[in-house]
Length: 261
Image 1: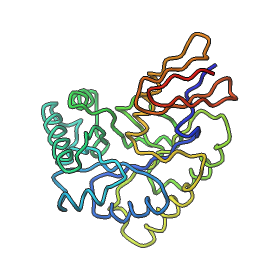
Image 2: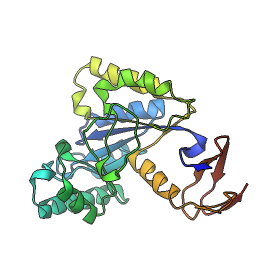
Image 3: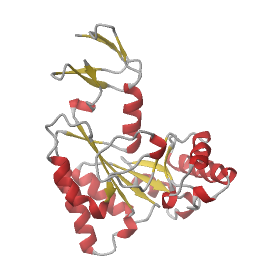
């Protein structure tokens, strides 16, 4: 029996952070991410960016930049044509600055409906985060309605629960923490988020990933080709993949290669 719940390096758990609006406080937060070796996705409103391209590229280097619309409207309260124009313009502005396809999103104010989802899909958006906290560690059933685990203010109680499952076969592997860096107004606020990051960092059993890295890995896994006797694995993607066989053997299938076990 083959199961997909193995992630890069043979890890079983995933941690990602997600921050909205593109506040200058992102720079200090990203410095903490780099210090502790974790990763995040930063959803930016292009009309709110005041720094020049060079400064922005340096600020967000090593993290993912994603969309948040140009003006932070409420997509569920907008005509689809406005959602399309706000999304495409935001993509175009961010791609001009950062030099890569920007196809992630988080819904401004958590506002979305089926019409907004359809409009964003038409704009090439591949995933979008909501603000509906699950209090758990679920992988998304629909990447266009990707519910996080919790806001950062509520993360500490979940850290212990998440870390206690690292060696189990428990199938809910993703700890997704979100927020806004402008919420860090005092040194006590900064101490809180550093405590959360430090608690989860440096663990060889956790894959530290951006939102898009998770999306890409999950989509690539579905393209893995497996023989009927589950001995031959072909990976037609550009991403290394890992699977578990018979609950005892972890198999690494490098990008573009065939592996026989």
